[in-house]
Image 1: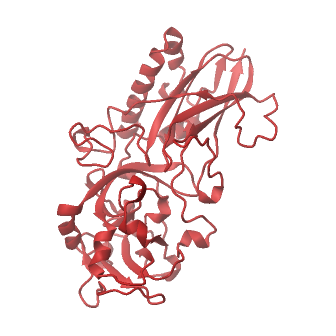
Image 2 (image 1 turned 90 degrees about the horizontal axis):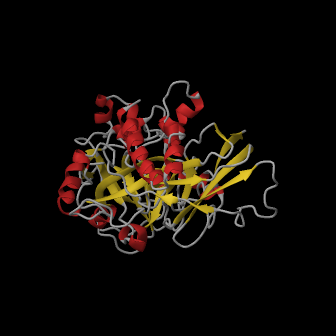
Image 3 (image 1 turned 180 degrees about the vertical axis):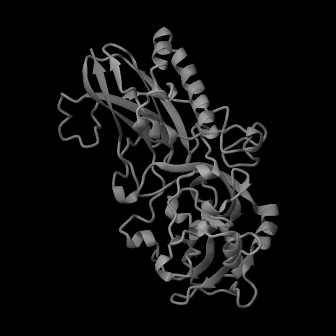
Length: 421
């Protein structure tokens, strides 16, 4: 078992043990039934794989799940090739241009041809006074489960935009990264210029990111520089950034738009359970734990409902709004953040954290994730389905308010359970 996973299991075990011990003798005895904390001996392989996917609150850079594109994928290039194509800190540069098809009025463009392209040295110069950090969970729109959670550091994108001295006719920012000089491999995204210029709804700024969890970005994570949009799914957070186009076009140009996805959907709030015991005995309390992604609308509750499969589901209730849901407990912040942080301390300043104590100002933190737990009463023999859902800060129950798949996963989490006599 790798060090990061072992650290997570110890921390999750500590959090949940405190929770179940508060419930007395029944909770304490039930705690040991959680497969997350059982010996690996004789463990079901599928369960073992799922357990090994679980991460600490912050994820090590090499622990992020990888959905990179390209043939070859840019991060797989050797160092000599990466230097040649501008994917190292000493060779990286960013061209900032007026869109030739829908021109924005710029006082100047930043180009390699004129030797005015924006370089990593320029970025570090701005970072001395403009750098920001914020926690963000990175999630793929079409996969659903989080790819990893980190503290991302960078310079607001608007700082570079203003260097072009923009005037009239600027409505969107188009951007893309290195793609093996093959137009067919280009992966594009875009943002309304208003989101780049202003930090709306108490959100951190869109950044040109160069560090993750206090360490330089690694090639697999988009080094040397990538875009990070705090509230957005992964496809907006373009890796290996190389070009910005300032445009008067009012339409998005995102590659995901061409693939029939909602390109303006911010992160949703949802939850999933961790593995349950393969079976429990009749009348034995059932301990349940899991994680929640805290989306743009925050998180106020996690709820669970266990249903006997022999009984009919509630009729005409697609989202189970009338089911007998039971509140779970959202667990407190961990003592160990993970992610390889120096001295296990959140860098200061970081959005959402007190700079003196290094602790979160509120919990759970929006646009990140949290853990939860509940002890369910014993059940008669039979086959059951456990379901879990979130209630966001506006009172909307998962999968609402945005249940549609094209705008990101929101399906109610499910897990089977067998109760034996």
